[in-house]
Image 1 (tube, rainbow, N blue to C red):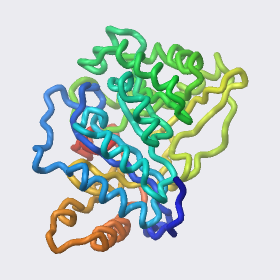
Image 2: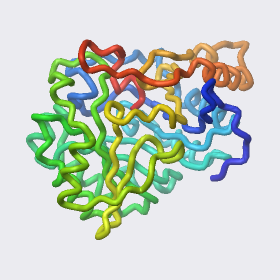
Image 3: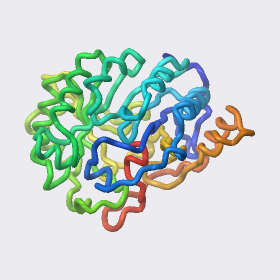
Image 4: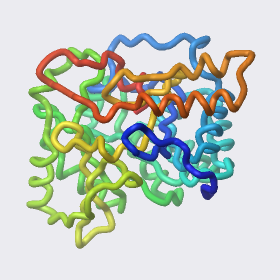
Length: 336
């Protein structure tokens, strides 16, 4: 897959947007404490985009110069017939990268079909290596199922695999080095992500549990000296990566609080309800479902809606842990 279309998606701040995070479901087979409430309500079926509608948005985005699509959720791999969408996007002319974020629960059965369909890289959430704690953090997940999925993915020939870990003080901060070692043993990357204040939760106080990236980096560097890989770029995303002299694995840090990366933002998100979110930390959005379901609309109208949406993309987010979250939608409804 290679991109040939000129990119016409440029926001008011001169940022070229070529990356779409496509949420295929708001549902998940886990209930991670930083992502969802324990008793969640989900969008009714009539309000979610069909696989055909999701594909239409992806195709319009690529026609406008988009180069990368990430399938997210919720847990994308529990969407019924999701492989039909994966196969269609994997064959989409002009798309450079089709990638996926998952909790890993379905990878033991789907890693090989995903690779064969054209998915090049996968990010897998993993916050604990202790079975009981893993179940507490996910509420209903099983560690052995995820580890089996990771190992299947390691053998499937993806260009790169990455673990995503959210470290919470008082919950799993004592596992940072164990998680790095787990990644090193498999020759895969790991990124530590500062918790983002999306949705009202009662599991913990986010201001008290935030584990800052700088402290984690110092802890890891004392065991495995970290070599900076340079500042992140628009293509690399918000993660700051470090290599280790004795390993092919890399360690990354995504730091929306301690190291704001908005000036590099090259992405938009589509929720499964058809809202084009222009910023993770703001409510600016465009209703693409209305365009898709308008009988008088066509592909050109969809493309124009995408262009118009870029004109309201804000300059930056303003996350604040001192009070109630400004963004009431949960991460599963946002699209990861």
